[in-house]
Image (tube, rainbow, N blue to C red):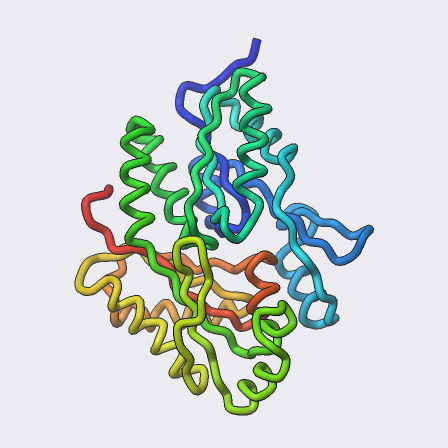
Length: 289
């Protein structure tokens, strides 16, 4: 007979960029996305290939990878690994990835083994959705009923913001998001697009000339969403850790930040924006713990 824990287990996918310290502290099982460099080179993100090695091959060696959502079998293994009879699985937005559907398929298989799984679509990517994982983990540890947690997650999801910029248009063109001609002209003019991680979508909402102006635009947009309220904020980056930490310090001079993280974007988003991608995600804190 299966031995199970009393509290619900927590599973998330690696595209939410939940910090390693949080994964360890709350025993969250992370399901890795797949990175594909060729027909015989399929790697699990952060398991078979490190983020450092990924960027080395992608940037330094010029190898163009593709990414794929985790398989249902990976999710089923994760559900089992929690040792819980009830599991909460939080995923990257279903509109941009097949991850949510893979998690649902695995949930149906887990039910046959007596494991009840609730799959929650964060409707975001990276830490824009990762904040929901963190909140759920803390509330589960506090013994809060799942239905109440879902109500809180809905409120957080509604207030969440995410804004990004890139250092070059080359990788957006390579990923097919813009034309090569537009990328060439934009790079010559030092144009940096501003993108918003909206619920279920990633959209260009503006542009700036140069890196400094694009950073100021990210802070201004985040400030408009937060106002004077305290906020939880994460800075996400692609292969620029020092610049990302410096950017967080800039953010703290304009936003009342009560909790913050710097996270490195993995292959799923890194292949789209390329190295130098920089983003700010978070939400204003209201009545949630």
